[in-house]
Image 1 (cartoon, rainbow, N blue to C red):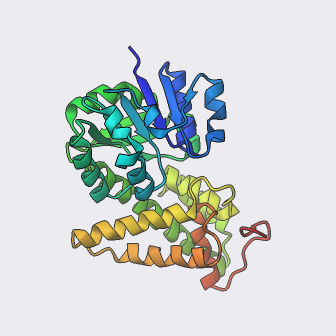
Image 2: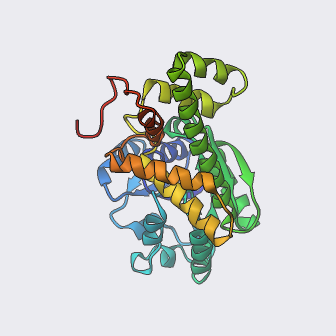
Image 3: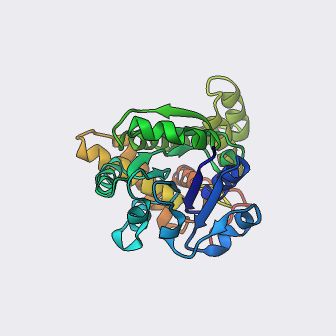
Length: 305
C-alpha cells in the first residue's frame, strides 16, 4: 500500500521529485513558501496546504528538499508545529544538502517527539530528478530506511546506505560535491592552458571526455564550460559556495586539512563578487580564463546585463 506523503520545498529539484511520487501512486500534500510553484503538482492531484505543519499525517512521512541548513532548521522549528504533528512513528526524510552536524542535531531534536530523522541527500541535476535517475545516499535507523525504500525507488536509480549515523549521508554528499567542484576547476585550468597554447578547448575536452575521463561529470560539465552554458542555473553558484563552506566547516571540526577546498572557496567568492551568484555553479570556471587574460565568449551574459 502506497504511503500518503507530505512534501516541503518545490524548487528545481523538489518539484520533479514530488511529481514522480504522484506518478508512483502516492497521495501527496505539498507546501512551498511560493504557492504558485505547486500549480503543476495540483494538476496531477497533489493537495496544497496553507500551513507547513499540515503536510504531515500523525505517524506519517514528510520529505523536505530545501536549499540550506537555515531553511531546514526553520521548517522543523517548534513554532511551525511540523514535528508535533508528525509525532511518534513519524519519519522526516531530509533530502537536502546540509552539514553533518546539523543532521545530527536535528536527529536528536526529532527524537524528543518520537520522530525519526532520516538523511537522504541526492546526487543529480534537475533533469536527473525528472528521469528518476538520482543517486541517493541514506543514513539513519534501519526500520525507517526499510519503510521509505519504495519512496526512494520512485525517485532514483540506486540507493547507497551509509549506516545509522544521521550525519553520514551528508558527509558523503559533501565529499561528492567537493569532487565535482574540483573537477570543474581542473577542467577550466586545463582548457585555459590548452587554449593559450593553440589548442581548441572544445576539441580537448571532447577527446578527454571520451577516453581517460569518460564519465558524466567531465562530459556534462565539460560541455557546459566550453559553451559557457550557465543560464538558466541548474544549481546556483551561491549554493555551490554554501556547499564548499560546509565542507570547510566539517573539515575544520574534524581537523582535516583541505587546501583545495580553500582554493575553491576563493574561486566562488570571486565569482560572487562579480555578480554571478544566480548563474550555474560551474560559472566559477570563468575565473581561470580571466586570470590568464582570455576573453569570454560573446554569447555569455552576466546577471542583469
